[in-house]
Length: 489
Image (cartoon, rainbow, N blue to C red):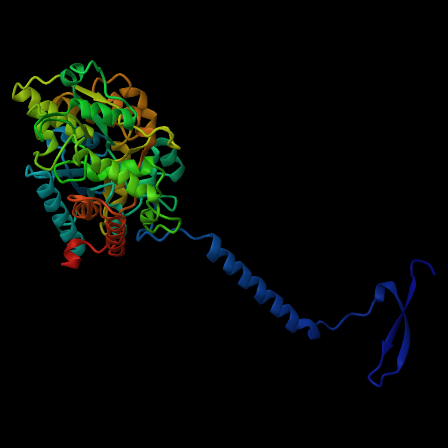
């Protein structure tokens, strides 16, 4: 057969009869591809569709209103002017940092304004919120600040007005900052704010009054602490002339709401259920916690009552032995003590805990954070500045500026990688030691929650029904989340 071989094919002619055909291998019959054309076209169309879907699903970039993300948006030749609204900090302590940033980013000018007035705290808070709420709801491009500060218990109200960071990864955020900061200003793997400082609560006490009871520092157990407070309380008849401890739920206790929340958390009360709804009224330990606090101003063993002035004032008048306050209030007390030559020997000690609580230390956060306004054209420049400002060297500079301006101490650093900086600080050590254990609550509008607390528990006894009513009030406040004051009036 030579180089040829023969194959047999069965072929059916149009009449249906089989025909056996012998062909050589190099002369195989050619198939008619025309009958497969519809299938080929369908396959190609499907392949093209799959490619298009792949590109749409996996080759997207987030839509942030810009064509760039993060530091890629920064044009060194673009003149940028940023408005920054702050609280508490005078321009004197901020301006040196702004001047330093100008040498790094000469095209960026940042104008800082301290929007916290010198009025009493409640009035200043109301004025600040009213102004920030007005410009946000009116969305006036001329008056809107690029950066503004909010309290950690206000975050829920302002979420829809905040532009999250695109230059700080969530993993870096969680690795760098204390858990309470991550809980308050991290959400859905995004970073929504950066605080310049943290704050929490300690016991401020009159050393001489404790020494008269042969005690050097207050106990760190609540039961023993209450016993000492009762010993420190002096009476003429039924009238308290020297208060041992300003505990209670009345308005003359500056941080009654915070104390109540701390005691509930220490007692293992879950403020919110798994769905994020307030549920503390269903836990009997809520009533136990609040009654424990109320007992400091009720009954024959009371150490405080509603007839006193504000607890800080009574402490400075040497009519109060112990109170609970954050570090910024400690600075106020130290300033008045020195300025008016009162000469109280002031000590700072850890907040008492409950024996047997699940977490060995529990405290509560009270601090402010910078956030970036959503509807502003230079948001990436704002975040670039905040990222730089919150680096360790800049925070140290800020702390030094504050200490030089206001005296005694600087700031409690919000970064856990800076904890060693304050371990020997005379005033801040006690506060600094508990920062890893500080908790918070997503109460949306802490201002209204505090007011509801005083209204519910400020006078009279505490009952289960009053706790239920308080919880319902918080639920109502949360239901109005994001509806700022100027929207609801």
